[in-house]
Image 1 (cartoon, one colour):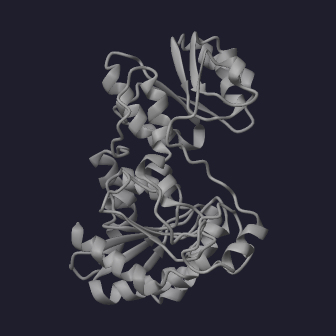
Image 2 (image 1 turned 135 degrees about the vertical axis):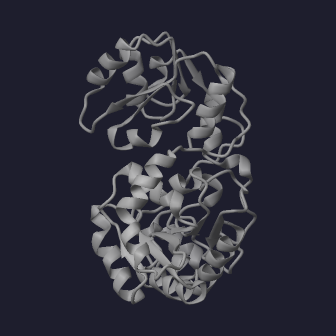
Length: 357
């Protein structure tokens, strides 16, 4: 969601040397990105003083502090970067040279208490506060927060589609490593690659049920012909992906814990469509140009949906649960926001996405 701001920053400052400070586990995302000249990766547990020392060596003239945390502002203050631009917030304004007020149109996410959830489910569908009301405007999306910061350095604040980059050579190498043997079993027929990402690191409230993923895999495979579903996930998702593979009765290959980040990007690029929860791989796939189908429950697509808001190649599905979005990690009731999105509805969305690409 930061990539539109980086793209606009590059447009505004074509001769600038732009470096991104990022967690080491995400550094590979930014390889080949035309908006950046370099990255400075940091690791979990690294102190603000250690990060600041490495930033100070970069001799930077200005910094956009994208996170709203006090620590992120402290690090750039310790690095003695002359211009330090970020949003005003408690415990960090003193570290910034320009503390920007919240932009017009900002909607903050409100995490509902268990009491609020129980009160809302007792209301009629469509009552105020429920998901059946008017959708939030596109200007509420999180990408606008970063674009507004970039505008402080002269960048255009209008959004662009998020973009990540993977090379043809990486795609071919990954296809040879993961897909070639599976394709040989297709008896010479073209193999349609489909992806699914059934995990979500934030918590179980963002996860559509495993049996529903398996039901869609069976239904789509029965209608598309020779296709293969690739189940993606981290090592922690191995059991989940293997469970879906068993439930689907064939046609699903689990790659959980088996890919590097660049390999995951290449495989997402190869997929015709990705069925996914609201997650990091959802955003990565969309930024690589792969259509995504997403059941949304505890979170709001208007705030953190994939791609450019309103992009019709992506299908973002919600139920009529009046307590959604609650922004909770776990559901205090029965996960009706997710179970209310039927496999039949998702199957039709996947087939429609396939017809568009």
